[in-house]
Length: 247
Image (tube, rainbow, N blue to C red; front, side):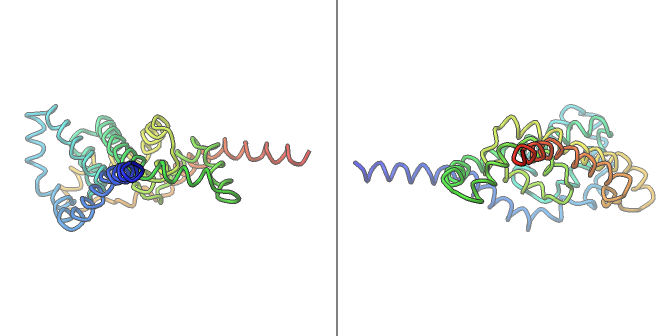
């Protein structure tokens, strides 16, 4: 009976990591097979057909676009930046940002759930059972989840895939992940969507868009300001705790 129970438990553990394995396999295959298709050149060469289809089937275009964006994010396929530009190109800055942020959040949530199902419980149990520095780090993250979640979303240098996995492995509640993802990626999404909205003029000049615009001082500094603001509650809590210790 014990062997049968152990076998069921092992089988259950293996089943939990199947979604993660599927994502990893899709990401590897996509990196080699889709990179040439999900590119700026593809968007430029097919821009007239895309606009014509959008004008004839606006709702269908929006739904297909969001479904494709969700798949790109959920399976960590190349082309997320191009997808964001396409959202701006097809739907403008306002609607494009809404579509981009919503689709990216759904895709990120799928990765989050897959990672939490496969590894989150195991890692959380080990973290809770640990002592010393590891335990203090885990406790600190738990106490400042909102600040840390917004921070890793706002910092341009944190890879999107990494920002999806870390919360899952730390057993962050789903609603916190969704809210912080939706609002945390919005500043960057607005920047790149607005670039996409101006692609018509870029295409007319035969140029390529400046994707490094997010690192321009007039854009980067406000985003860094939001990063600092996101860490303010954690900093105040730390400062308050230090005062209590010094008393």
